[in-house]
Image 1 (cartoon, one colour):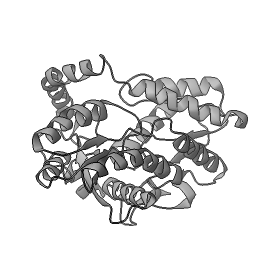
Image 2 (image 1 turned 180 degrees about the vertical axis):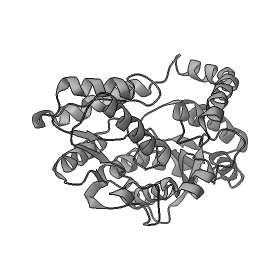
Image 3 (image 1 turned 45 degrees about the vertical axis):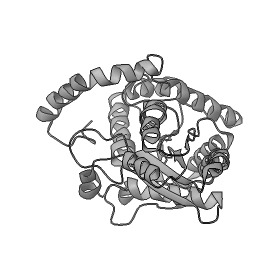
Length: 315
C-alpha cells in the first residue's frame, strides 16, 4: 500500500514480497491460534447486518468492502452499481482518521468507481473519534473490568491503538494520534472515575523504523514494576482480529505475567454493541441529509487546521 510504504513502485513491490516472505513463518501460527483465519470478515458482516436492520425503514442497503481481502473494493463497486443506488455514503470502520486507512480506502474506491463508471453522489464520513454512541459503548464495556481491577489496587487503563511509522505523522501531518488521544480522553470523561489513571500507547509495529510512541509493551512492563492493575482497551479497533485476539490476549498477556502485573484485563471491541450500531445509524442518516461531500459527525472538524492529511482540507 503506497499510503503505508511511500516508496516508488519499483522498490515497493519487491519490498512487499520480501516482507511477506519473511513474515509468513511468524504469521501462520498466529492465524492457527485463531482457527486458521481472521474473524474480521465475519465480524464486519455482523456489523453491516445490524446497521442495515436499524435502517430497514429508510431504504438503505449496507455493503462491506475490504482493502486486502474479499469482498474487495472493486467487487463491491460492481455490486452497488447492480443494486442501482441513488447515492452512496462511505462509512469507514476506522473511528480515528489516518492517511493509511481512510485516505487509502478513498483512493482505491475512487479508482474502482471510475473504472466501473459508477458516477453517483457520494459522501464520506471521514471520522468519528468522539461520537457519543462510540464513546458510550467503549465506556460500558470497560466498567466491569474496572470493578475487577480495583480488587488488586488502583487500576490504570491502557488505551492501545494500532501504531504508525513516526515519519507518516511528521511528513504528512497525519491526524491519527490526535484522534486517538481525543477518543481516549472522551472515554475517560464518560467513565467519570475520580483521579482515573489512563495512558495511550501504540502496538503492532513492524520493521526497524521508529513508530509513534509510547509503545504498548514497555507500558505493560512499567505497570508490572509499579504493581498497577492494568485494563487494556483496543480503542482503534471496532472488531476482533489478530491484534486483539493474539497480540493483546496472548503475547502481551504473557509480557504482563512475566512483568508481575497484578491484574490484566482486555476489554472487548465494540463489535455490534447497540450503542455503537445506533451511532453508525445516526452518522449515516446525518450524512444522507448533508450537502457537503466530506463530513465528520455534527459538522465538527477533529484535525488541526495545519493538518494536510485531513480530507476536509480540500472540502
